[in-house]
Length: 194
Image (spheres, rainbow, N blue to C red):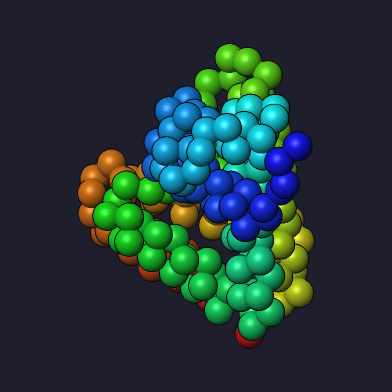
């Protein structure tokens, strides 16, 4: 049996997350993953014996965890600094990819649920979005925003950022994201007491 190389496996997961954010789930295959990661096809199947479903789920979890870590760190400095960091991260991704990459979590959430593979990805995407929403809402609540409003604002921030990312990709320009960012900051500043 072949030995496991954690770095090579992690590189495959990160590459899969990048493919999802650029191409979506249906256009991401094990063969294309191996090619993009410059890895042997056989070792790719070795690391992911359950095939595409396993790769997609691990890639969504990987991407979700990276954003979750950013949210946790950024929101330690308060919701305004946290929102700034969250939005700056997405803006950087949009610009660095030249409007070709979005959010891998949203990408799998938008796929039509035609089989159990996609349904499993939808469930995981839902959990990731719930996690982000909870973290944002907690920070808002800790800074004096009433819980139900904090929950609604957190949902608004995530949905607005994701929608702005999609608009930027379609329009190949950053203005929609900057406009959404400006309005979200105003909303947040007015929502936090004193």
